[in-house]
Image (cartoon, rainbow, N blue to C red):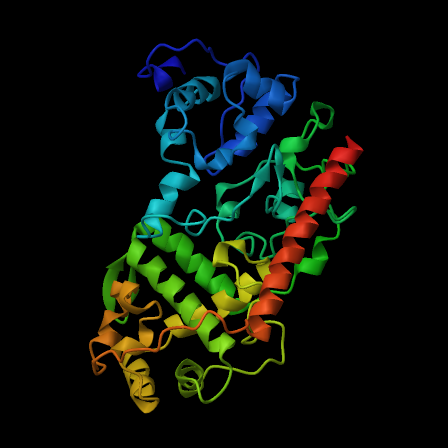
Length: 393
């Protein structure tokens, strides 16, 4: 077993007294919690014992620590009796490179659910599959659960959760005490978080199928779009583009708007009858920060757009008089996904018309005010939960 990490440079740490190997699909946060409990101490004691100069649990540990200190991964590899690559290349920061070409300032890691931590308290909570945690011989959290497109457990086909069904507290395994021993408990009420999962059995087939495709694209690093092979990054960029297209169509749900007419021309359901029909987000936040029911709604339409053949795309665009500029939603800053270029190249290119300068003295629209208020309420609720946690302590 020593040979598995003998290539590492000398470190002050040694393998754990009670062995705690990391599972192939396990997240770093999950392994840290399990390792701490196996040694009979709290997660904060465990982290501060080995990395006293860092407050690891104030960070999103699933994103890895190369941006903090490269030696942390080396230490973890020794403790887990594995290779450093398991931590270098199996974290969210690294894997997000296989899913997005986004560069520069981005409010969240692309396609990764944010935690927005305040000290050790995550304001959004971790997502989990209640059936997995119930069936695991050793309960642990999967790295897949952190992806924003991962909305259903691919094993049990139940919707992911991020709250305890007993007390409605956010699932915060990093706040668990060592007395509970396993990761599948609520830190607030100490109940197992696996009860009442039957309420999550509503499955949207298009979303579940898109999720399976995403997992396959991550593995193969390529996909087929419009009969052509594209790399994995281009495929995920196309899904993100379709989500943006859906947001715009939902925002302007009126036949006078081109993108809404395009959805009708493509034969998509634009009614607002069901919870997963075309509907605008309540907060207008980036996709990664949206609640799961809104992400499911957008992913459903992204899958339907992905399945439309090239000739139907071109015919529908020409029918609503859409041109190449129609899809440049951010003006000159827009970067169209390469996988969508077979459609774009068959549309007419017109000169961009000069737009009137926006007058900032005009009052905000009612819709903008509602979104701003919804975001403020979301933030207030998150802070209220954090204050309640401090009170309970």
